[in-house]
Amino acid sequence: MKFKGLFFIATLSVLIFSCKDDEEPAKVDTTPWENAENDTLVELTTDFGTMILYMYKGTPLHRANFHKLVEEGFYNGTEFHRIIPNFMIQGGDPLSKDDDRSNDGTGGPGYTVPAEINTDLYKHDLGAVAAARIGGASNPEKASSGSQFYIVVSEAGTVNLNGEYTVFGKVIQSADVAQTIVTQPRIDTQTNRPKDRIAMQMKFIIKTPEEIKADYGFEVE
View 1 (cartoon, rainbow, N blue to C red):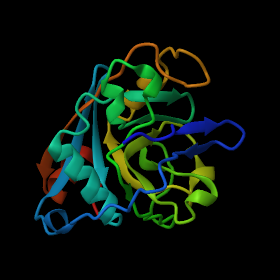
View 2: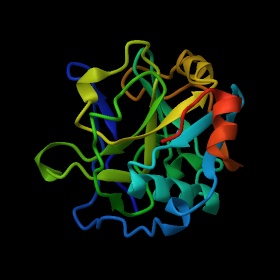
View 3: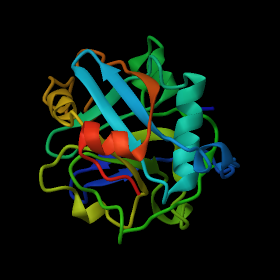
View 4: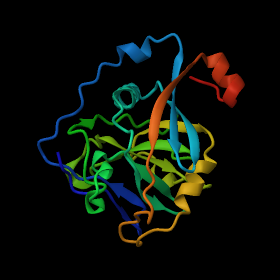
């Protein structure tokens, strides 16, 4: 399924993801993840290094959907197709795997995920992992894209996006990799596509909360 692209409005610093009107919210079974004894981390590897991502249990639909896609290998070979300095890097579009770079940012798995916005707990801080979405009056419920996500690279965060997009995870190790990616040369400042393609691979790391604290200094929920 094709979608209109997600793009950046500089004056508002808003991410907007447009899709067809017939999209339905994702029907996601969160049970395998919510009842797991150990926590599941995601290892995201690029040519610039490897980041470790933690998905919040307080956003169970996004967490389960992201884990499902990682398990299926959905993200392997997809690219960070949009990089905006002092803002974010964005990826997760299956169309970024093909040779036509002009359609990058217009694809997805064919469904949306219901919003799980919680600004009391999850904010657009440095390293936040959040979901792109349809903008404007066509999406009053702020449902998220089924696969496209972005990582905040602004040292000060992007507070203007709090309450507008679902933050569902955080980079808990090597956020500097995202900082390196965002400084790569771009084709132009309209599409913000990197000149060289930045592909990713993802896989799971299974650890207990105690191991996560010891290895990454991160307190799980």
